Image (cartoon, rainbow, N blue to C red; front, side):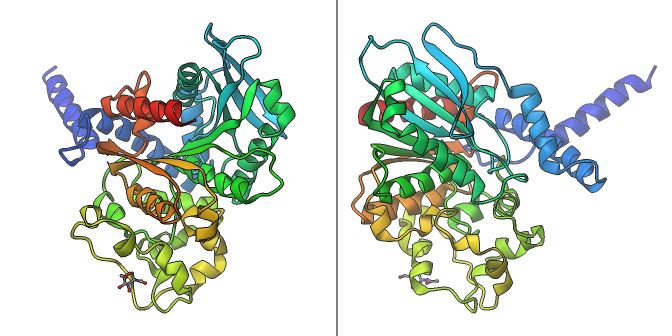
Length: 408
Ligand SMILES: *[C@@H]1O[C@H](CO)[C@@H](O)[C@H](O)[C@H]1NC(C)=O
């Protein structure tokens, strides 16, 4: 069989071509990222195919793949008791450290997983491992919330689920049941979960009826605005996996129930063009020429078209709602927020969302710790656990938990 080696060569070449994508040379362990990206792209191609054939929604295909390989039951260990339960009708997984003495009160973190408000679960191996480790290292309690996902749930349902479960947990009798010190509870999340964490923190901070307030918020490469898809980080990282720029616009429209034909206008900033009615105070909250230091503005120019498409904001008014886009909150809301940790990655379209929020919080006199990873990419913190181990992922987890340990 003379054709066998030739076929093998061809197959290897096709596979290498498919997996290989150019990456900035400062990205941590580029080949691992390429493999994760290739798997994700493969599933997305299948998802789009199934969607176009009318077999299934593309998001179900992605979620099926994620759940099939990643979801695991609540397994307790000697150090951590793990339980699946419901808080006010919202599914949660609770991790309780067993390392405290009888009667001693613990610290607690409410955690919101990422996945574009459409993917992922508290029961996924990576999030389970992260929350388990947090409970263990902090000798505390971690409540990981399984809010409902798009396309079944749309804004504000994900937010409402996150808020309802958080409020339930913050009740004195519930905190007592878990032996949690009421003044030592924090809220945290990554990516779309960072968005929900920031939104829930704003609501709890301004709600005078809430018996307990958060002591800290910790936001991991959070999504915070959908008004400018041409911040320097969006421009710089549009071709860096795994969160490509059009994918982020797609996630936003699925979350806010907008028509997917708006992806292109969003990417061109047509929804916030200069002839689209919108207030000057609103523009200032996302004006990165003012909010970012020169080292992050680099050589990039603002994209502000003269003529736009007012229809987008008219049909998707939630684009301007701070519950969906926490960066749009007023300064007096921000001023009530607790001590904040923000993690950003250089190779991430969302880098500047986090940077702008940090800057606005500091302007409102909130204490902010900013951890920036020059070799980090979007999602790297969940690539810290087997089998997707990465060195930058490992470092982000260590520094994040150390900050919680020092500040919660
Ligand atoms: C953003 O801020 C700069 C500097 O203050 C200002 O010149 C510019 O007009 C602002 N851009 C918008 C779109 O408001």
